[in-house]
Length: 465
Ligand code: B12
Ligand code: SF4
Image (cartoon, rainbow, N blue to C red; front, side, top):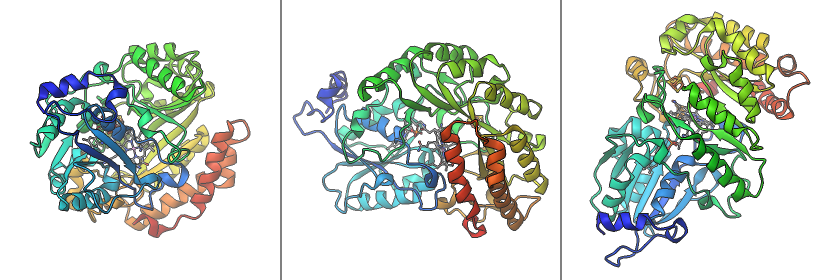
């Protein structure tokens, strides 16, 4: 099929295209199998909640269904992989570091059976040379920015080893994913009820441990508030009710104040609730959480990271000022919005005192849902290059932020893990939960804390090595 033919097909209405359109030469459309590999059994985040809807893969499927036939399988919800891949021309797999070994296993099987294999997602983006060993083609970064080239090459069977967009598409051109692709009784109830939504991409802050600048760039791109509202309405119509729960997948919903103010204003009265990651410097202004609450916000995820200014400096998180932490928490809590606070341990600047400082901060400020992570140098980040000579292993299954993969300068591994477990247990002890959550927080906050209480009391040091 010529590229012109592809483009003409691409302008047909969605419904007609979802089963794939025949090419202008009359050959049947290529058949794609889209795969979300399972995570390793130990992944902590999946002990607390059901898997999130696979938005990245859904975007690939949404674009692919316009020209090809697509089938989506998600091992996280129990879908099985075929032994025989001959029903498919293309096997396209998404991967993060934590599940990339499973992705490579599936990819190798499909390649051995002569299928074309495309790998994409965070890990192949960060380590394309490694991913190439298991694929016909590796896509670096977001699919939307290279789709036309990739689709044409699949159609002509001229896949290139690497696809990297020269220019990232403005988000104003990007359409939302087609969630009908996930319809059907088999999937009912298997994912979290929160619907993923993207308002912005990219982050200008540039923390040394973070993958985002490499995946989405340092330039902050935003959709228009109208597009986001349209997408919310699309879900309300599709689900037949207004009261839906959304999760903004953005790294930072508020890196541009004019944008976030307009978005929140326009969300007021939609009848939805939502949560989002947000940079704390915007929360210093009380009107932002106030507007967020009116727009339906029930939870903000804030990366406090550390109570030590040296650590904040070391990771390059210029948006955090420790002197403002208490004010930020007060501004958010005043609006009745819960805080999921992220704290990172095991950086070279950390000592045993870091754990006590964090405990004191969390208890004093009654942080609703504290999340602790072990500093993990993800491949492709500036920090990974720095730590590489000290890594204990490159067993990617354990790069899940709950394993110690290198030994920090001021704590040996045993002290790091012992203090880490102690902090978990203290913060989520009955007394800890009661002091932080009490009786006046929403029921779901209490239930989440209860779940983590039982989980924390059973933690064992060997889980973290
Ligand atoms: C929201 C979020 C979460 C949520 C939901 C996760 C989920 N399953 O969606 C929660 C809180 C549960 C979570 C948990 C974790 N997360 Co998280 N998370 C994110 C965040 C902020 C957004 C993810 C997202 O949905 N993006 C929007 C979608 C549309 O983008 P996408 O998936 O990348 O897909 C695009 C491209 O990658 C590409 N693409 C994707 N797949 C494919 C496949 C093919 C074939 C092709 C061609 C292209 C392609 O096109 C897509 C559309 O543009 C990212 C940071 C980021 N900006 O990506 C971190 C991020 C993915 N998370 C990260 C980590 C470490 C984790 C945890 C391991 C640790 C933790 N925080 O507990 C767990 C593991 C969870 C898991 N099962 O993988 C790291 C991953 C690092 C790495 N090297 O793998 C990231 C990159 C954060 C960071 N800045 O470093 N996370
Ligand atoms: S502020 Fe968040 S998204 Fe931005 S670079 Fe730092 S960790 Fe990554």
